[in-house]
Image (tube, rainbow, N blue to C red; front, side, top):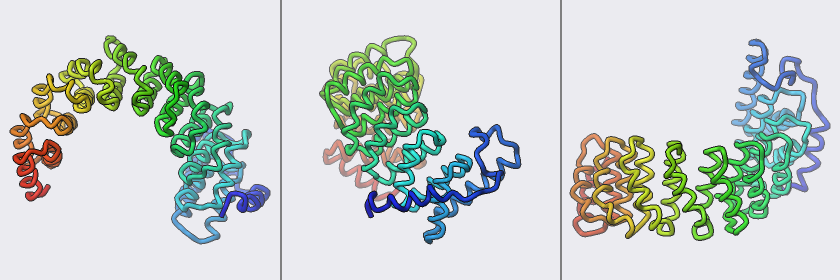
Length: 370
């Protein structure tokens, strides 16, 4: 069934909005402003909508569609109906989602839900409407539209210029974050997109910078202008822990393109007090190939780190780098009677190293089970 064939159905639904109890109408968009009785009523109605999502009869679908279309209802009830229709994979919901999204007088939370659910339903015909929603007056709607375009992946390639502009100029940090994240998913690797993401690396919001870094890394050689900027920021004393963690991971995702510049920086973070930073640092070195070999001994030491996460990342790194000198330590990991994750990591690393000795040990550990 196509969108064109479904238009008459949603038109009828919007024309028919039955009267409901005042307890469920939208007189306060913030649930914290409701009294206890109304809150309980709204929550109960939302739960009813979620339950209908698990049914598959025509009547329950009709109820959900009518609920989503009814602007008099509280946004939590309508959003629950929106999610329930998505869970049912209801094609009849697509034109209703689209109408809700495009109605700028409608509730921002319901429009946000509609945008995301259009993406989960893979409604590529909605891409023009989602692009328009990137300019909406409500930041929440702009954020939802950016997220939806990212979820639609390469089909949203035409929206890349809009998303790039949003990274640079949207007044809301969350909208800028989602725009950068979307660009990492849709695979448009142009100079213009890279230039916008490079500006994103200098954003006042750390998470915009983090998402911009991740997006640049997906662009590989087209995003290498961001490498020097990330390294420069990592060298500043006021860099936050999250920024360090994700910048190191992004540099690792550049692989050998970043290796010469970034390997010393990653090596310097192997002794950081934060587990997540050590984990990202050793992960990055594992991606740096020959440039990481001078730091092999430090990488192997992290196979015995106190953090499970760091040990797993170190195992990945020694596997990527095929460090035969790590085999004795991997053998210890694989014989840890309480370390299921350690054994799995050791088996994977030994398999990647690939020498006869490593393969034999991997087979022995695998036979013992987890």
